[in-house]
Image 1 (cartoon, one colour):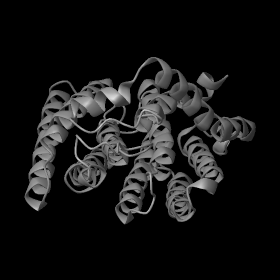
Image 2: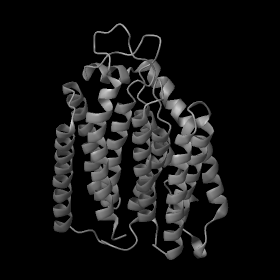
Image 3: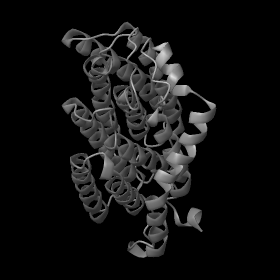
Length: 333
């Protein structure tokens, strides 16, 4: 897909802007009491941090899409995401606020992204792939499909983001924007993984994107309590749609029972994997509390948990990619 490069980079740049807004506009909303107050924050207090981390993951996903799943782009994308998280913690400790800080972070982030993309593009031109356009190799298709699955699970995490009060309009706006960006990334990566960009696949991808974006808006309109079932439905539709867009259609049509199994996995898998990853990590590794301390923020009340739901979503998405990132018929047998 020739448009994968500019689309992926454009979406990565949009994620950088979301990250900058999350740091300078949303993060101060979660730190109103200062580090010495006896009124310590509770569950989901640092929702802005999770939205920022999701935006950082979206930057990496966009780079994988820009590289069309090639390893020479995917590895630096993952490395950049890890370094960006470390930089995020250091910047959070400084507590930047205001329009000037937002612009500075956005421009700096886009400059880093542009520099990395320029280096990778130069290396690619020096040693071009055997098939620069047309159907990507099976390994690259699998990487793109897995990336789409990760973005799909992260969409569910973003759209379900909560706070202690759930009355902040900025939370709704940030969750909607982040989830919408991840939807577009998921569908774009799935379409880039397709063996051929036929009219049927493009139409299916467009319909999936519209349906998922409407689903994101509807889920955020539901109060936090009964929001779980709509979240599960959104994830199932998005992940099943990814398989329809990305997988092979032998004879010009899908293998329906393969997609039925994928739908079952998409319905049950994300939430089950979120719980399976969250519970052991919460018990054994206080990652959220460590990040909070490194950023110089107030610790969570001892009666509550300092969870990092974005990390759990990433692990769950990677697990789902192992189940669904098999776009070719031979790999699915």
